[in-house]
Length: 171
Image 1 (tube, one colour):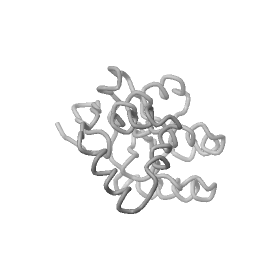
Image 2 (cartoon, helix red, strand yellow):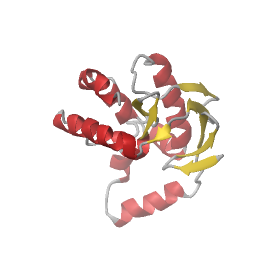
Image 3 (cartoon, rainbow, N blue to C red):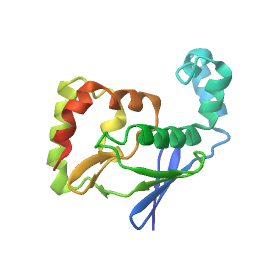
Image 4 (cartoon, rainbow, N blue to C red):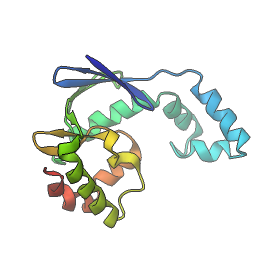
């Protein structure tokens, strides 16, 4: 059994599955608020990155791990035809997600992964950390994404340009 820690979730790797739990960080909003005020950024502008409604945006920020789990599962159910997604088998109301477990990008798959990175960059699709090595793995001879729960990632993944590149993810 192994553990991994992400920005909004922690992951337990057991056998051939990855179980994702939301990180509960009750002080996170207050620390972030102080950072925003120190940088003289607008609180409303920062919250609107999550939603136009301040109430919904605040809740999404506070429970971002739960929201990410929920959307990751829902997105996979609605888009399982996107072959580069690691399957999300199950979600319990966003409190835990169960995904197929892949192998980390290693020396044997890194050159192909770098080729995919270059092709994505050529199409202008790399302003996001979605395709960073830490969010990818290999399953059955193919590079796949296991972290696709945030809104920007979902928009990018349904983009026609990505569909044109899917075959490039095969090792």
